[in-house]
Length: 245
Ligand code: ADP
Image 1 (cartoon, rainbow, N blue to C red):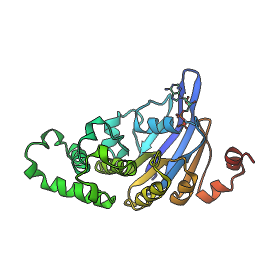
Image 2 (spheres, protein in one colour; image 1 turned 135 degrees about the horizontal axis):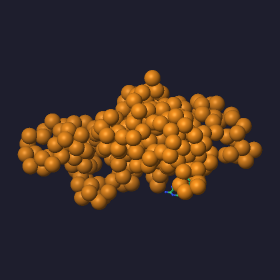
Image 3 (spheres, rainbow, N blue to C red; image 1 turned 60 degrees about the vertical axis):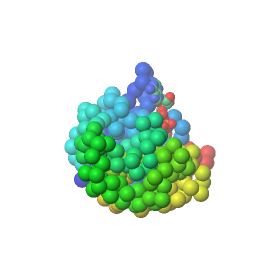
Image 4 (tube, helix red, strand yellow; image 1 turned 90 degrees about the vertical axis):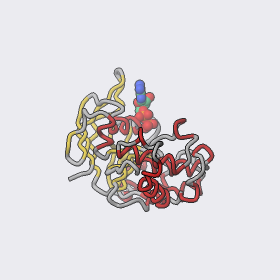
């Protein structure tokens, strides 16, 4: 069974077809990228998957169960998690506090977390472990707003992992991160547990081809080609779109 599937997904804005009959299969444990030129419909597709947008037509299955009509929070509970964008709420919290808050949210104890801190050693240990797994333990006590951008992006992934995703959606994880740091960021992503399925949008083709085992090319809202990196790289239709051949 696939971790995530879409069947004939369509989304229109007015008369404009932003998602055109997209049927996508993401295998369990895959590192699957969606690539395509600007305006191809990548963000719209991710927004449909998370439930931020409702499809005009089509279905979304998570581990074989239809989640098309489920609200965003219920999809998160079922394990379909998108990276948080670090926002004002977290700006003045340290990296460890932020991750503990996300863990507490998952446990449903967020409202109580700030009071008996001593009672939450387990949570704090878990938070520290999570930070360590992403190479962030040395910045645990630093406010998120003071972290270098690359570390902030990693912390966003840590916050998403705190929610125990089965499928993790990464929307341009390396956007705005300097080249050298983006390689490190992807090396860290590559070490994430193999039972977490990853679907990502990324512009940097070198990273995409190095990191993923499956690529779907989206053009004008529709899937042009879907295959292994090798298959996609030698596909004449893709070469035409990307290299003008
Ligand atoms: P990508 O992420 O691949 O750059 P998007 O999903 O952001 O592409 O956009 C796909 C197309 O849908 C674009 O032409 C964009 O202008 C259009 N679009 C996206 N969101 C909306 C919206 N809320 N209203 C109208 N058009 C939209």
